[in-house]
Image 1 (tube, rainbow, N blue to C red):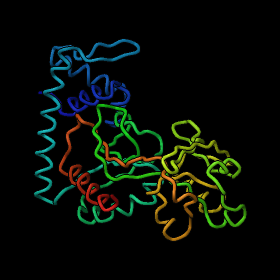
Image 2 (image 1 turned 90 degrees about the horizontal axis):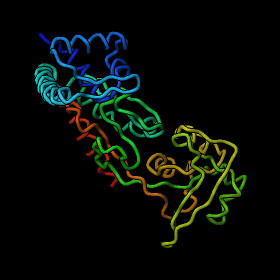
Image 3 (image 1 turned 135 degrees about the vertical axis):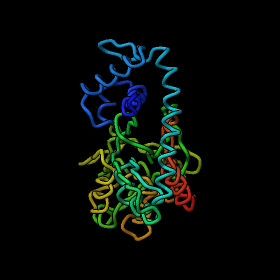
Length: 297
């Protein structure tokens, strides 16, 4: 009789391409994972992977078996979810990834009604401004800015969004407001590190003419929440997602320096793996997010 945990491990090894990554998701040691895979191959009397010191890839038999395993696992997961829903409503864990500032400043508040509607769902948030890997981290869905590069993932647009160049009244009182877009080069600008690269080229469109300025300043961070806090404290000018600072703009804590400009358009998406079965709880969260963000369009 095959072990369900071994089958789940086989699926995760296939998706991640790594025994070590799959072991981490399964919360077991790589040695235990290797032994489980060997046990599964012995029970099936079939080699599922071709191994080398640097790579691990499915054999043709492994690919065929994976298709059946994924379908079976989806049906089993759905059956468990139906039983749980009958007993207590939607339940279980959802691992949700999101950018730092969006997660802390906006998303946590937006998700409160979902938590009240589904008290038996444990919503675990993973906040990071780095690109989050579904196969290296236990993520079910991710909310993020920007288009997809990985064709193996599905993205659904939640909301339009653009960047905005802004500063606190206290900064403007000390240093004045830039009299032109190019004058930003003379100001202390708070730069953001994106995937290890300094984001110091700021772009905007004025009357259908695209303009760019290279900025600099005395501080930078790879955390959007930190960039926002520095701007609020009057330490410099920031180039932020409008959605992250819309409350600050409405309440006057930050000032839009170029309201006539159209800055970079960066829509907000909800993303999930295309091959991963979506349980009822994950579907419910995706539908909730689409509804909650629709008012911002």
